[in-house]
Image 1 (cartoon, rainbow over the protein chains, first blue to last red):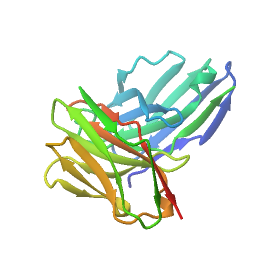
Image 2: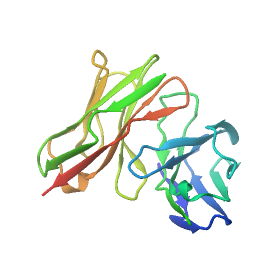
Image 3: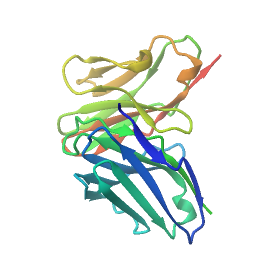
Amino acid sequence: DTEVTQTPKHLVMGMTNKKSLKCEQHMGHRAMYWYKQKAKKPPELMFVYSYEKLSINESVPSRFSPECPNSSLLNLHLHALQPEDSALYLCASSQRMTSGTDTQYFGPGTRLTVL
Amino acid sequence: AQSVTQLDSQVPVFEEAPVELRCNYSSSVSVYLFWYVQYPNQGLQLLLKYLSGSTLVKGINGFEAEFNKSQTSFHLRKPSVHISDTAEYFCAVGGSNYKLTFGKGTLLTVNP
């Protein structure tokens, strides 16, 4: 099973709201990723977790706060977002993060709209 | 450093015609190449990958790609496309680090 699940599918929030995105995989992968994808653009890497520890933060604003409670779950906490943060947020996982050979498996994404 | 160039932003074709989506890469280290497909309002799905060995790689849904080291290319082909192949296609390169570098994508539109 190569499935990565994400909830919710759609989210609309105001600039003062606090919300969270959730990602789950049961493939035993030890690397998990958050990407942001704007319309008609490729995904942009935001964060990488390796063995439940934050390994990479691609200079993401602090209004995005990732969390990895265990090896299967990845959350993205959102607070005080701006309208330009509206995008498709994709989660991915791979066996490890150390090798370029490891395939990243993507979830279906959460479509976020910030009003 | 590594980079990917997808030479065509849009490729319109008629149903049952062959198609080639072009991808060129640059990398200073070992190259691992991937093609992903993204259907409207969905996540990315792996079509195929080249890690080593045979330069002709077969993937899902009848797609294949050929790794050409001398031309630094990894073009995606399908001999006969269907309406359901309409989607965005991303070429990506992975190197010796964690990072997957994507091209800008090619929108394949299959017309009846």
